Image (tube, rainbow, N blue to C red; front, side, top):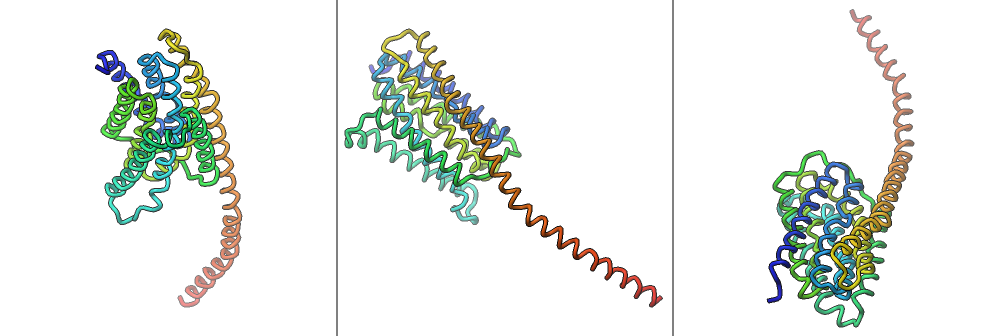
Length: 326
């Protein structure tokens, strides 16, 4: 028998933890806006359960390295999924009902993820004779480049939500994220690489985009996509740091310490700097927009000042005509 009841129970705990975090992330985007909420929703939280579960089940540094270095490649594919959701409102016909738009974007994004992830797991890695560690390192660099270029060159407003997300949508998001992490835990003993990819399944990204689009509109969902791209680097950072610090057959207490150090390092090295830079970028863009609007406002004020004497003169003449008539 491949799995034991302990594996099943641990995988269930991993899934529950991921579900709770997924729900919190949705509320964070809704309450705090796309920039801060996008960073919070992509902080390395759900992957903690995945890393602990894989380390506990395999007790092998090689397996942990293969699983954790699969995460950056999976997150890069998630970046492409986010890009689809970010640009979708521009290209979907306005006459389509909301349900049709969501179904079309959902089908395209998840089908693309499945094809690319399958290519890496089953064929691309072995065909190119490239180690999973090297591929993960390259994917992490490309993810950072794509995310920051998108934010810097194709920035969109990231407003706060004006309507609360329904309880049903929150539950759906939690269930999808929990199932993805549960499958990851069950795959840990069979194929660590596949487990790493399963943990990076875009359940949180997808359900966040769907729930934000339905409840808040495209402005919040599209605006949150860019910060989520950048914020996902913290997940990559956690996976890499955990893999490098973990050693064979250490106690669960020491594994927890490795997880805590990895989390703190990922937040300090990736999440916080990303939030600060994004805040600076947003402030600079708003300042530039205000500067562009000032000349137009001044011209409108001057035109009004020029029109005011004419209006007063016309009004006085009209009053004089009425008085002469009476």
